[in-house]
Length: 118
Image 1: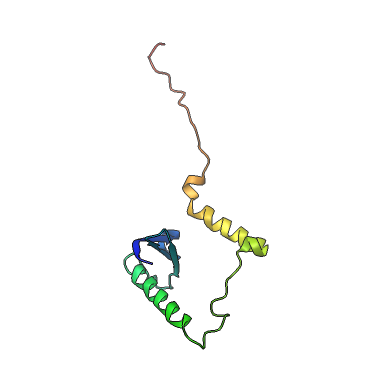
Image 2: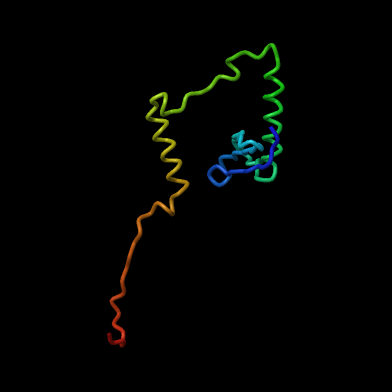
């Protein structure tokens, strides 16, 4: 895979971390999600280097004979697992991230008379 593009996506404005997407020349996309630590040392500038490091570590350990299937197990999504509590939590997080846009539209009119005639 030849990487032709990189995208850094902040999670909750970067406070929760970042997702780095590497886009390949044939449309492949590899995503690395990086949680931020308590000191919030991760930022948009160093997230790509950290994601590259994570991918190198994963690729290196994938060739190890000591690596067992548990290390690279696939986790089921909350929806597939039927975990309603996790789905509610994810919904709440999503709504928090769009809070200003999720407020209902309020329309007000002025009752101040003007001297314009129709």
